[in-house]
Image 1: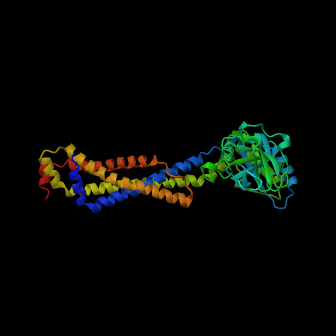
Image 2 (image 1 turned 45 degrees about the horizontal axis):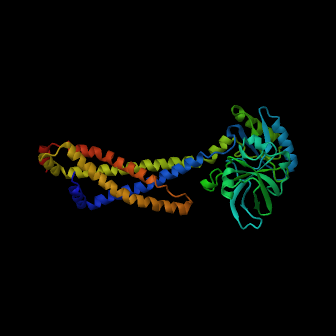
Image 3 (image 1 turned 90 degrees about the vertical axis):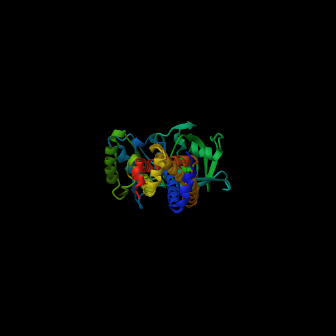
Length: 403
């Protein structure tokens, strides 16, 4: 098909053509970035916690004036007597719960070689096994690895780091025996864990979500009031209800944190509730934007069909088939959409750069652009199909008498 007449017709309708092309450009930019944001949200929501979530729950008590050693003794004794409890231990935080040990680390005592901001899991005896952590290097913590707390971690401790953190700090070198510091606190790596998500889930960006350190610690001062429960998945809900009642009875002076005293699946759901809502909003925005774009294409094509009835009739009288008329409008739409997506790809990257600067999002992968272009090309062809079919169905005699 000769497209020169199509370009000539579009030049005679510059304003309408540019308006539709800019609408398509905006749709392309928003579509690519919205789909990328949805993919990022879904990736965060499917983060591997590294623990046996379906078997774990947390009990959190707030007690400002309590004797920490006495509080632990009473609550641990009460929780161990709850039917169905397989293990109970003191821990400062759990995945998808509240932060408790976030701090910056360095690879030298002077603090000149910054290693990043990590989360420390300070946990008592039995917690490593209760969490269900998977070791990939080194032995599990031994009894003498559990040491007393100095502030929020032991001052000189053997620790277990995640593979992601070890790779970040030592770039493929054997991490066992490596050292790092956090202010005056010194740590030596005794083992490597396959996965252990930070308490804040996906916070800190995709590359930092597993920058976690497990620190064996003895319950007592600076480590009390937060308890990890393990039970059979089928019984976990009932065990948690009984454990909450037992904890309140054992420590009536303490306040039970209702929001944090939940199963880990519930904590995960609560943590990612905003992400689920945001994903739904973005899906709605995409659907509305595509609908408006399709309606704009339909409206413009229908207007042009009405204006060109005489032209269509003349072409039909000269021997043009219905297929020729149909291809004419589809080709015309394809050219308009192509102009729009060409501008839209530039806008998509501009919008992504703004999102990177404003919200620290990663760079938009290149493959999102051809996907967005293909979707809009397909949308344009489907939207113009009905008006083009109406144009192709106009009989030559009726068309020539239309004006």
